[in-house]
Image (cartoon, rainbow, N blue to C red; front, side, top):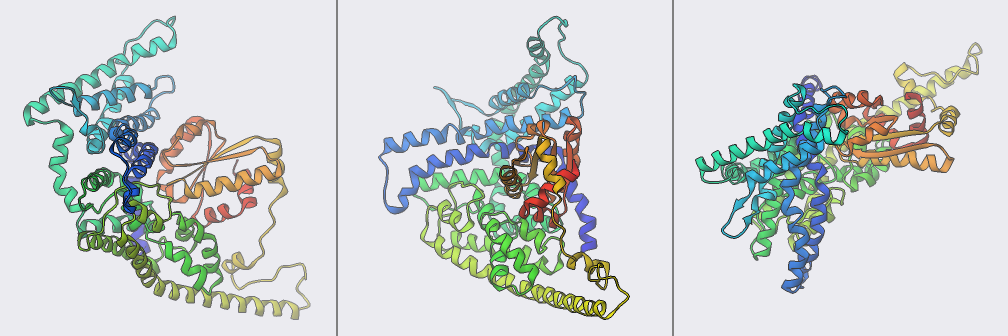
Length: 573
């Protein structure tokens, strides 16, 4: 199995690292604060309905203003952020002295999107497709405009002013031709498309893809999405980075449709909503590993799994499951192939049954992915009574699926640990019985591999601490969602503050605030984002920043050991 996965992994990594897929994913991540912010107002307006309290209409309308003019314009903002992220990738291919202006690209993309998406009315305009229903069109615009700019800038198809002209004015004229070409191209396309189809592009896309939207809400569609994420992760490639860009437009549109159904007093019926992936499929992280951490914590007998359980149960509670994935490990471990794929599939099919058959409301609110899954499910469904039953049943089923596999694996590790203890004991007796062995030699083991496990750990070097008292060092840690990178950055910052060191660490999700890199001395890339190493190296090389990667277990050890993390940074500078 591992040989097959080793062959597949480069293919999956290439897909995840594709600059266009990355631009879509990172463009959406950049707009997550809009989604979460707007959901606060939506929940204040409608969550009290679960307990029979209804705001007066004027209060509800006032609360929804913030939602309508943030979430209601989401596609407009996504067009700009997607274009900006692709522009950053394109700029790596251009000389530093001749770069694309990302601000101009954002403006051109948003103008082009508005031209394609607004429906004129007799009095005013219809902004329906500026929101969630226009996301696919926004991605199309955001991926095309930077390429128009790239061709113009690379081939110097720009207006050049004399060197005496101030830079800001010269830049405005330099942007004039690529902006004019971008906007004009989409304007002409919009006019021609509307004449040919009688509608605007976003509405046409929704109509054409409506069968796909419906198929994604079926048992088979949901199972494929959940299983694909787990399969890619099992092969060592961060699953959501491949799957999410393809399904985000569907999930966001369904979430908005669910809210409209709820407001109209109808059954909230769309299963594949935003938090369905976060809380149901990824119940404690990809592979639905919430129960895994607690099984290891309370039922494991081997020292390895007990240690992993202690380190993982808190992060897993908040959806950060890398300590489990790399600590057990689950990734590339055939023992867990079946439960890792089956559990999220069972969860989402059960959720579909509760919504479609039992009549439970689906998810209509969007919460941060770090909210513990059981709590997130209750809130996102508006505290539907059946949601409490669903959460309890999910916990029981997940334990039932994972427990037999963990028990077998735990027994195997326990037997190995006992065998090693016997080897150490036998070798120790042999050393004591021999007069020719120097007493300064540490206890020997049967093999070199054994020695790596039984020899005592060396204490952290004082050299690392002394280095950071004399040198200012800024470190950026990047992972998939900002979870484990935050743990590592916090460990470094805490140690730095306690010991008066000149070390500062920041954590980000890959694709978020990448401009920070130019101000850093080092970037540590989490192992779950190994597929992005090539793209990231182009950025770090551009700014002369040290890029360091880690193995799975090493990374988890660094997040739990501040001294080790300190020495790791110093030794790699």
